[in-house]
Amino acid sequence: MSSNRLTTILLSATLFLGSDLLSIPSTAISAEPTSTVMKIDSSTNEMLYALHYAIIPGILFSETGSRFFNDLFTGNTAPFREIVEGPLGKEYASGMTFTSVHKNSYDLVLISFPQPRFEALSLHAALVKKDGKYRYITLEDFSDIAKNGSKTILAELTADNSHKNLGAKNYDTKESFLNELDKFLNL
Image (cartoon, rainbow, N blue to C red):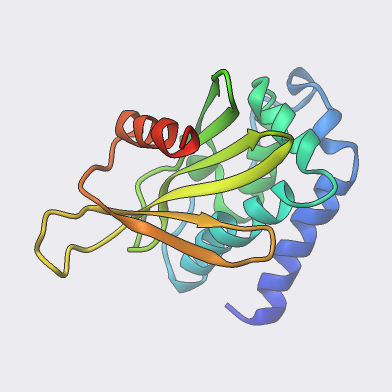
């Protein structure tokens, strides 16, 4: 995909979120979107990568981040799914699941993505709100090149666009990721 197309996708997502799209009740959005099923090719891979590592954290760390987080946390996922559906198709957008978790010291929205199409995509991403600040922590698909049983990498993307590798993990389930997050966030 050309950098112009990627820029257009990122700009479109930002413009949509800058508008009142997130304030539209989910019942006001059409139940039958018209997008076609996602085709897997190199440009789709780039769009998936952009969604996981640029668009979602970009929105979370922007001035609309609080509204974005609150909408997802309260179950208003339809506007975000609609944004995702545009470039990636109905199958991918409807395959994402959202889980809200409230703990004493933090709130989080766990996004579980459909099966990754290539290594390094996130299986799950946690949008975390703790002490009034947001964090974006991912569990990324990983090939076990060291042959030590690792399946995934725990990582964090920061507001300044840095990517911190927090270590190889030998699990890939949502439940294990949530347990790891609870320990990690309560240190």
